[in-house]
Image 1 (cartoon, helix red, strand yellow):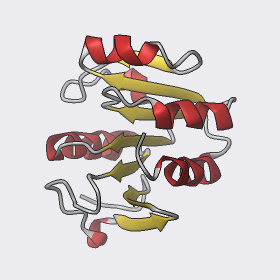
Image 2: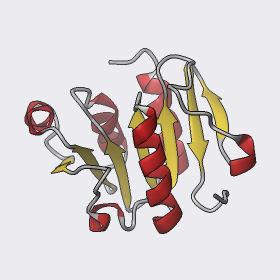
Image 3: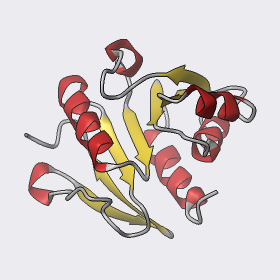
Image 4: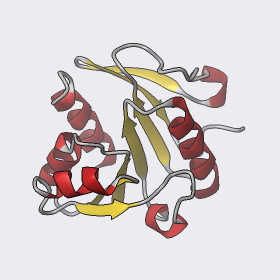
Length: 151
């Protein structure tokens, strides 16, 4: 579990209470944020995706109420993301951030990216495009509201 899991979950729960759908892209072997979000927002559909089946088989052991979907963000099945209010990714490589941004431009969901430590992970989050660097408790992340930006 990340040192800032509780603070990150607290931000998401407070900001996205009442949302129909929240999605984590690239869950890997760390299902703890999605699990906590679902525990706090029981009425919200929480979905985790990864393109690696063995990652999904692993997280399935811990996520009874979270939907687990194999999907490749480089060739996404759009219907999975339709209606999402927030799509987030924890420590993603730059390529994933760029693909999420493209999808967000089409579907209008908010994005939250929690990079490695305080590093940007190879992607610059330009304020002029609407990105905000957020500090919530111990958590530092980049946040973009779906309609606040232009390409």
